[in-house]
Image (tube, rainbow, N blue to C red; front, side):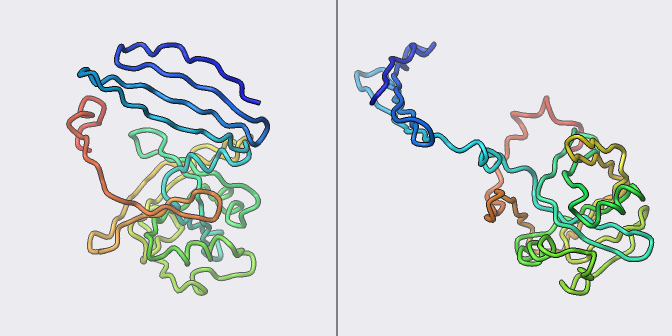
Amino acid sequence: MVNFHRARMLPHPPFRGWCFWTGGGVDRKIHAATLIDDGVGQTNIRRCVMHELELGKAFTLMEPGPVVLVTTHDGQKDNIMTISWTMVMDFTPVFAITTGGWNHSYAALRKNRECVIAIPTVDMLDKVVGIGTCSGSDTDKFGKFKLTAVPGKVVKAPLIKECLANIECKVIDIVKKHNIVVLEAVATWIDTTRKEKRMVHAVGDGTFIVDGRKMDRRKMMASKLPYGV
């Protein structure tokens, strides 16, 4: 069965179009076409077919910031956890990560209220995945993955020498309902001699996206950017 309805005219004269949907449930599809008049008597047709995606997979469409390693110190030993869901809160050095009791490091993070966000690069991907698939309760992750702990300036949690950058943080809020930990940076370090600088982003289904070409739109965004960025 095909259910068809004509789309309302788009607000700008060169464009007009239609759409209809077919099927139902997980097989539902939206078919759409836009007719574009180029002003010299030619009409181009731009078509698309959108397949309905299971709601349980919606999160794979909006990957957050880069995958990071978060180090903690519980008073006796250091630990590392891999965090895929991260967020920059605003132009101040405030960040958020999603974690909870399922991560062994969370107890130290909640008790001592400090950590280091270490930013790995694509050449460290297998280490990053390995760290995220074992537990600090029975594993020395620094030893197992041959990473070097470096003392920080402000917090007791260590920096990771092999990472591109390290951000020392203090916990300023924990939103328990959503397992969100809000962090404020107190010191930041970056390895300017490192040749590999591409970070990785988790899709959420076991695949990753690597940083690509950087697009510069600083002039267009000048009025929105803080001074010195």
